[in-house]
Image (cartoon, rainbow, N blue to C red; front, side, top):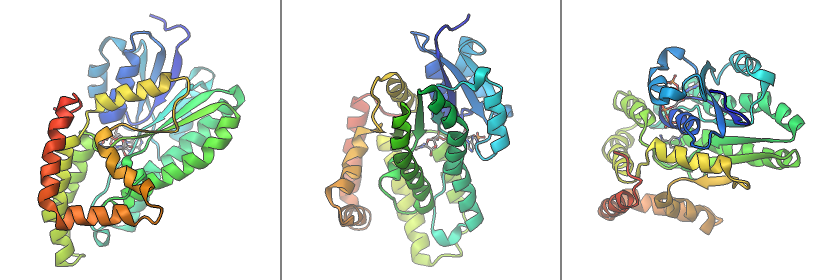
Length: 313
Ligand SMILES: NC(=O)c1ccc[n+]([C@@H]2O[C@H](COP(=O)([O-])OP(=O)(O)OC[C@H]3O[C@@H](n4cnc5c(N)ncnc54)[C@H](OP(=O)(O)O)[C@@H]3O)[C@@H](O)[C@H]2O)c1
């Protein structure tokens, strides 16, 4: 069936998680407003997407190869589209990294930036000129609450999302002049393979390069808390996908959108104190001094989250 007048949406990183959920949600739109180009770097990992896409496969959803770290791959994908037309870019591909800085290599950090930050830069460089020429388009970027507020042992990942936010904030004014919209989607914890991958890597991480106290804080305090946070307030990728669809169809989409209301008190601290001391003191106290209170709060949040119908299964 031909989808008439549908907007062409290119989504990156669709082999799993949020990218897969966004691609499928848009492809299954009841009003058939989208034609989705669901991309992934490794087409051998397409099975989950094909299964989830069901009847929409090769109708309102087509799968293409795109590696965010490779300009040729991006160009080839875009050139393969009719008139190179992309109305909406959902830049989602991303990787995580947690742990003490001393145990991470600079080349691993550069690789992370190459995907999370330069991947976005490459896609925007490829697509923005066409959007400017057409005087229309929407660039939707999967950022994170860690692009607003840093977090213990997430130093390099948070830095990559801060870079994403600074890049988009700067570009948004120029984009506006050409009627191109920009939106940063800022999820809190989302239960996807992302979480699984970073925990698996953290478990087998060689901590011999750091001191005993830092290794203890990471293993015995940070990792268990982080898991509790995911269990208590973690969203489903489908929930993030639904909110992303609403942003795409909105006439006036906001520049920033946080998907998890329960995480907002933490990010709000950033704006409440221009010196930056409030969130740093609060995180320090939560983690090192008031762990019982934090545990109790997480239990309450977990109940609230389930009642709101947002809890991950
Ligand atoms: N999960 C969370 O808690 C959370 C919270 C806030 C923001 N986010 C952000 O949401 C986005 C999606 O994460 P997710 O949770 O859905 O994780 P995920 O399930 O691990 O999905 C990440 C996707 O990115 C793809 N990818 C990685 N490197 C790529 C590259 N060079 N080129 C193209 N695709 C690449 C992965 O492909 P492969 O299968 O080939 O690895 C995968 O499809 C990321 O930008 C992440 O930073 C996640």
